Each structure stands twice: as structure tokens, then as C-alpha cells.
Amino acid sequence: MPESPSTIPQARKSNDYFKMPRSPLLNHYETEIKKSSGKKGLYLITDFLTKRVWSWMYYYLDSRFGKKHPYPDYANGETGIYSLRKSASSSDDYISLALAADWATYTTESIRIADEIKKHSPDFTIHLGDTYYVGAPFEINANFVETGSPWVRGSVGSFAILGNHEMYARGDAFFDKLLPALGILDSAGKFDAQKAGFFCLENEHWRILGLDTGYHSIGRIPVFELFKWFAPDCHFDKILMRWLKEKLHLDDPLDKRGLLILTHHQYITAFKGEDEYAVPARQLAALIGTERPVLWIWGHEHKLSIFEKAQLNNGVTAYGRCIGHGGMPVEVKSGSFRLSPSAGGYPHLVAVDDRVMLERDNVALGYNGYVLLKIKDNILTIEYYDKEQMLFSETWRVDNNGVISGNILITPECPLRPEKPWEEAVK
Ligand SMILES: [Fe+2]
Image (cartoon, rainbow, N blue to C red):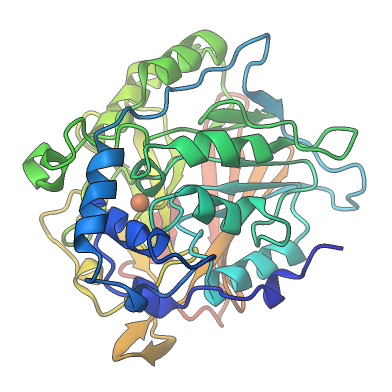
């Protein structure tokens, strides 16, 4: 019997990740310090921070200047397109999918979120990227692969998309260790492996596209990528674009199914110091146009934020939702929670969860959380949870002409205070 996730020893504490810089250099530094400590397992960053700087520099230069993992495509008749279906043992009248982003910290907090997800017995689970610190093999193993690791697999299948952090270790462990441990559960009780970093789950009414913005989130020259002017654009790889066109026929105007896009990186933001990745939105627009509204859930920013319908920079029209509060500390008093009027998403922000849950080491922490999707015929419900309760939900309906319409349900107990009326989130 596998060990209960709640009893796994050596889980990292949130303190390890406070004020963790996003720069590849520093993230890689932290992992190499841990690796070079000679100890087995996962450790506190405060054990090591500065002593092994030359050792880190050696490892960093050695790994970051090497080649990225080759980009896998589907082959041998596999398409990466799977049917949305319930588990045979499910008594629900809907298909359920649990989503978490920026979850893989291997902390007591991330394990708590996994435990909450498990209570729903979802048919599918999807991780929207970022394994900390850099998606190194031992980090992928601890979060997802080893017996007793906390990630919950759906009773039908489980998938993952790349974040930037897995690419700080060049994607090797993501492609070679994580993906083989995911996929669809086969009749022998084994997951048949996710073969590429993108996928589609579909039925006759909806398509859920897991798309990869992580592979091109690091630059060709490591030092250059540290400067904002040379920041990579997170574009979809040409293999992924070919798959969208030739396998998915996403540009088929006769396909009226509702589209839910999942990526790691955000299309828009309302916050200071955060970026807006317009190129993937334009690549999607090249296939479906700029007018057809889609639902788009992303992570990367460590917060829960909800936007009204928006179309920017010649990208698609999207109802954007950020759920990057899966497992990283949600530093609600930090600069990344400050609104930026110059951000494209600023006028479109409906709500952000900036509640303070507790304070540790003089840092105010917000709530971690996740999302549960429920699909019944042409109706898609999105429920937003923190570790204790459901905060609010929205229900989307797609009609035969491909028009999606939404309703948002806010209970009187909802603790969030919106920036504008909640109804704006679904208009
Ligand atoms: Fe990220």
C-alpha cells in the first residue's frame, strides 16, 4: 500500500520559496547547491544558499549551455487526442477534471492541495506546469513519480504541460521521467505515457487543449535570457502548430465545439512586473481568428485572478483565468500583487484573491488552491477552490453555432472582493 501523501517526510516548507527569483540563473543555482550537498532527498534552501557558488557555476554552465531536450511529437498512429469520458466506476453524471498550476513544490501546502483534489476522485488531472526549483530529476520524482509522491492521477488519465521551471533543467526530466508516468490508464492498470508536451481532450461539445508555452520560455543564450529585452516569447513550437492544424484541424470553421485552452504562461496580466505573452495568442488567432471567444486558464503568476473577455495584441478573444496558486507561496503583499495600470489586462481584471491567510517570517501568505471542471454534455462548470472551500463557480454552455455563454455563481459566503461586478467575468 503506498504511503499516504500526508505522511511523506522531508516536504519542503513554504519558507524555502519566499521571494524566490524567477531568473533561471538563481533557480538553477539553488538546485545545484542542493544536489551538491551530498545529502539524499529534498532539503531547505537555507542550508546552502551561498557557500557553493563556484560549484553551482560549474553545474549551471555545464547544463544550461547544453542542448534542450528534443521536442517530441506524436508518432506511430497516436494523435494525442483523447476522448473526455467518465471512469467506469463513477456514479457522477458528469466528467470531472482537476487542474493545478505551479503546484509541484513538495511542501506541506502542495500536499494538502493534492489531498483536497483526491477527495473529488476526478476522472482526469492536469498539471499546468512548474516543478520547483528547476524540474530536476529528483524534483520530478518526488512530486510525481515515486511511490507515495503527492500528485493525484485521475481514474481515467493524467497529463502535464511544461512550465518555464522544468526547462531550466532543459526539459530532460519532464520528457523522460514525468510524461512516461502519465497518460491514459490502460486495462492493465498502468498509465500508457503521455507522448508529447501537448494534448487534446474532447467530446462532441467541448475541446480542452493542453498547449505548451514552456519549451520556448528559455533563450538560446542563458545569460541573455536574464534581461527583459531578450526575454523569450513562449511561442508554440512549429511541431505543436502543425499538430493543431493537421491533426486537430483547429482552423476548421465548421467545428463549433467550445474551446478551453490550458497553458502555463499568461496571455494577459493586470500586475506589476509580470509579462504578457501575446505570441501564443496570435498563433491561436491565426487558426481560429480574433473574434471567436475561448476560455483560457493559465498559471505562472502565483495568484488566483479572473478577467473579463479581452482581446489584445491581435490575439484571440479570451476569458482569462490565472490559477498559479497551486503550491507556491502566494505572497499577497508583494510587488507582484500590485496593480499596473499600464498592463494590458489591467482594465479587464474582475477579481484577484489577495486574502491574507497567515504570516510567516514576516511574509503575508495567501491561499493555495485548484480548479475542478465538470462537463455534462454541452455544459462546462468551473469550480474554484482554496484548501478549505469552494470560492465560486461559473457555468458555460456552448450551442450548436459555437456560441459560448456563461453564468457565474457567487454565494453570500464567498470571501473574495471583486474589482468590478462579478458578472463582468462572463459577459
Ligand atoms: Fe512559471
